[in-house]
Length: 205
Image (tube, rainbow, N blue to C red; front, side, top):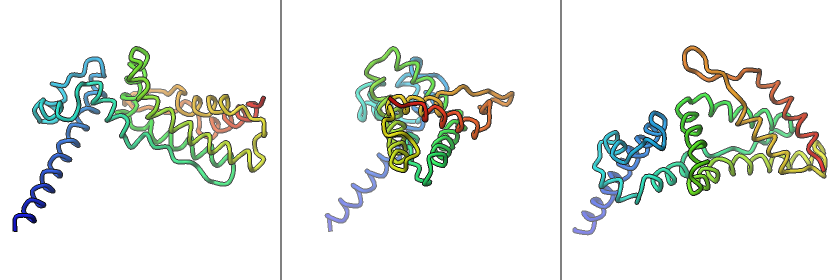
């Protein structure tokens, strides 16, 4: 009879640990959005998550280790590979996914803050770029390869330059902040798609 009891206890403990980790993760993201990485402290995260500092240090040895793991595991790191059958359709889908991400002002603030911090912190930069930059480029590379196979892009495409154009124009373009505090694109999405397509066509050796 003791074995089922131990199983139930272990399952309950694992569920509680998961709930605490979820609360900490939410608190870290809120602190990053509101205070930024440099000003964020383990104490502030613990207070916001309503846990003791020991709960944080059982999981991570430092603030940086905590932020690195949480950022690496974020769902918004995932970039789907478009598969519409045409380069224009794929680029439109790629841009639309990026647009949806930028509508979340909290996420945009976190990315902007960590981008700035990464310039000063090489170790954090490695994690940050692996979590955000590499999935964006990997999805883009697959998309470009399919376009080459379909004959929509030249076989001598300079892939690195093309990816710089695609990712840069899609994710690093300026946005306008409205009076209500929302971010909006300064030009229509299809105009951006046209510019990206023109840039890609010019990216050959």
